[in-house]
Length: 553
Image 1: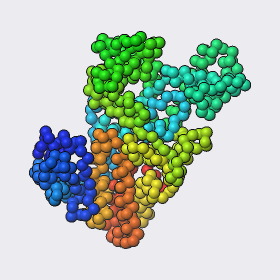
Image 2 (image 1 turned 180 degrees about the vertical axis):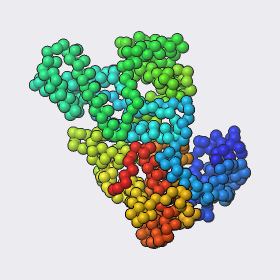
Image 3 (image 1 turned 90 degrees about the vertical axis):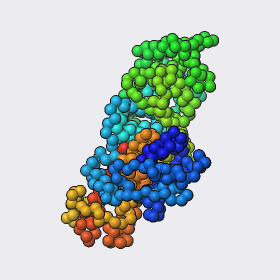
Image 4 (image 1 turned 135 degrees about the horizontal axis):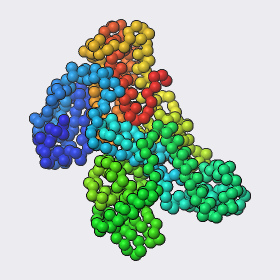
């Protein structure tokens, strides 16, 4: 609404600037400053060198409110815009929450807008660690969020089952297997040395005995590679499913070679003059698209690079009809971003259709003290170990509490505490408390009122209006978070909504007249309808995040 007004006032100058600057729309602490206030004009004025009051008045004069949600709008020195909401309209939205239920906040399907979210995609060379867990929580929540915003979403895991790392995996298992048979063989430093390889070697021995030792080494290594990768991938799939992460497709890199797609797309780029030969290798001309240097796609010995596979893989995504591609990578891949954006241009597509989200590292703490990320030290390093200690809900919620481009400190002890400082417990407890209130209402003969039975105009407490404003803003939050691809905005929202509900609930203990179930039957009905709407919004948002909403705690 504000950006639309700014667009009418200054479409070619201030509007593009507003889309880049960090202005805010917030709930003021003082009611005389409105239900919402924005510093948009002040931020633009400081950048443009104009008077903030002039910009604010220009926005106000062009502000359209076709649905009638605004009672009035004021401009206050030095350039704030204060918005006062139409309370009758807000009360109608509370009823809408009840009527729409699980669909409240969801948008109609945007036809033909297909989105593919590819995430985790860890090499099948070892169990998932906590960093993968953060990417898993982010990818699945983002897919849910985009779907709620009306997109047709598919989720995909790209299995890197080719290349040197797979050969190293096969040799690592073969060495552990030989050691199990009593042979004195050293494990190279650059091989996979985790205890999980010992367990795999024992399983391998139970199937083959000493048969592999009698085979040609090339054949034995191939067997070990296939066995290790399939078992590890099976473990990854099991861990992710337990973590509430499922995929529509597990896409194997090897299929790109089996179907000739890598060679096909390298040939097409060669015809365009974007792949050339130099010094015996073949290079992708990524400097054409802003990269600092060209990149090898086929080495001198004929082996292809990751980039060659990624060219074919992203081309395949587009050929399957996806208009938006979302890749979630670890932050250590930041240097790879320009190359893939260049690939999109080389394939003849607008690079803006590719969204790359980089996920920063996770540090494990125990009561604020860093713990070693090593299974050898007896501390937690894998996603499964963290899930088993703190629970799936706590792990997912905490992984989603920060923007993915921010480093995350994960305190294992805090995640287990049943107290206010534990964010997931605090939010889930709000939902459980409302369920408890509803059970008590039924036991006392009130039942749960319908929207026709409750007179919401009886709601007059400041805490009640704060709750109403928050739940009314939820649908816009879902849309904005989806467009920004930032699921962590939902955790911020849930923290605030839970805090506001707990404040409302606690006031009822101090003032019996402020309790949901009070001496006034009609007021009780109105309050029961309000908290039911709050419960529904809590459930809807938690479900997008992949976190449960318990009825009892």
